[in-house]
Image 1 (tube, protein in one colour):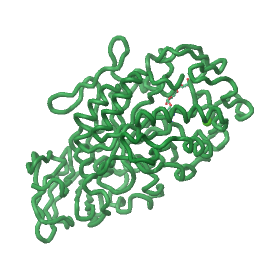
Image 2: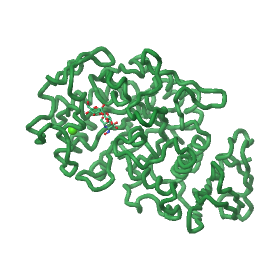
Image 3: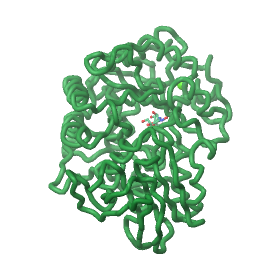
Image 4: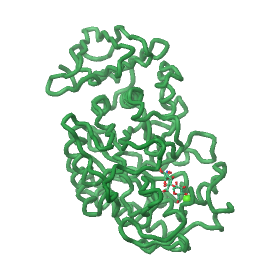
Length: 486
Ligand code: LAG
Ligand code: CA
């Protein structure tokens, strides 16, 4: 399950957080396909609780009511259309699968698809799940049934995460319902799953459920292809449960990655130490890892949050993302956010008066508006997604640093990046590993059909080139690759 099922030559996904299916379908066709993205992580597509206090927070989508495909992002017909249209342009859809729990406690109500539920009596008729399908006093020994002690593996897995009703995934019937939901999505043509709250489920239960999954739909994938699975395990050390318990099952989300890079690009740890970035920093093996600078939780202080870089600190954010995309370690994911008031970290996506989600509007210059940040469309980030596709398979070479915050490295003989995180000027001649020629710097501009809108770099017969980067630049990075030769 660790193989990302991307179409050939594509190696990065983006999380289009809370986007509507109709907008994602268009984004695949007009942008993600042509720009070489592998796929999209989407918000949970299954029916969720309608939360009105606060009014329609983003986190209501982590409170399942049923496995019907009706949410504020769209209905099943729109979902099917999106999956088909994205696959047709070689962009995969990865579903955020919320399978550890259903809603939190509280009052009965109806979900986004109109299905009733009653948390008090543990009734979810839309599945159906009833009282015997949830963990209770027999499995969880805390007084209020919720998780408090992250030092106890049993408590983390059998009690309620922030009060959310915890499914009894050891039970055959529950496994069958969860696998049935995932197989429905596979039959429609999705490429895999981000598994929400994996730390809160027993590895053996996940192994059993994933074993029940069908191969991917042969309308879009080679026959016999297993779904790509990456499990959300927040492991920053010091708890009973770690990533290594899950990395044998599928990939794991590497939360240390973004924290450590934030420290470097905030000038709290010298960039020269990135020389041995990866496993030697105590991180899982590259082939087990999904890496990212921030995600929808930690960018707003939820889910192990705090300390990461986000779009709000755009200069540092771009630098960290550029480093991530240039470096061989891990399978890369780009967060694509909506803006929110930092005082209200519950705030949901841009919406209309009736609380329906707003369309994503793209301006003539390619940027988004109306509260959609679209980091994946920032030129420097998009172009590095292209860089990664070109250099994939090569190893890191020609490392250089100034002993401080200026670094450079090549990817084999296919690409070269120079990063000046020092705040003072860089001007030096470096060996790039690249064949001689004139290259387009894909950070300062775009390359197309032999033309470059940014600055160009000449690599000599000796593979050396002169690089000059002002310390006060908003984009103190130069990146060149053999796919953008002038
Ligand atoms: C995740 N990973 O393990 C998600 O990435 C994270 O966003 C989810 O929590 C969590 N697991 C459960 O799926 C989010 C919010 C929580 C929110 C929860 C359920 O971070 O704040 O809890 O979704 O909507 C909210 C309230 C709690 C309340 C709970 C139950 O914030 O105070 O106890 O709902 O009513
Ligand atoms: Ca659990």
